[in-house]
Length: 239
Image (cartoon, rainbow, N blue to C red):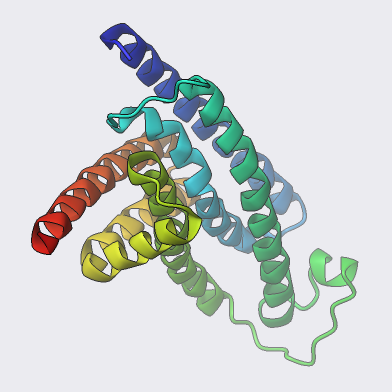
């Protein structure tokens, strides 16, 4: 791939990243408005945490920024990118729906037993305590946890496929091995993603359009470089 093709792929990659960010932002604002209509604003934090589950999906758009020696001869990088994007989209949407369903149940039981959701899903609870503050902080913790899981189980295996594909099982094993030796950097990266998604959407919504793509791009470039260094060190130790 020549310099012109690389530049074109990077432009397309950034354009798709910005478009995906706008889509997430638009969905978030629509959900926020809908929740306000039904007086369920305190549940918005659960949706913000759930959006983090789409991190592996959006991160695929940044793969053209990661340098690799090999180039696919049969299919263009763009066609491979879009095929992977469509496949991961189905899985991520399924995870998001499962999380939101669980969040609805927890909210209806522990936060607002008389909410529209509780009545719609016929959720009856004898618990009358209001744990809205605990619900808020639990969602913030889960946002960080979802970001960490997304990095270890989604982002890293996909990066490894691009840089050093060794089969599905070995790719996940390599991701776990890398995560085991880089716990603190991954935990900090997960915190950055969680903060770049949840805090802007909750309190400074338009800053999400800036913080999320910047944080994700920086983390992808850091992880790709860090994994390449990790792989080189492991090879030298084996020799």
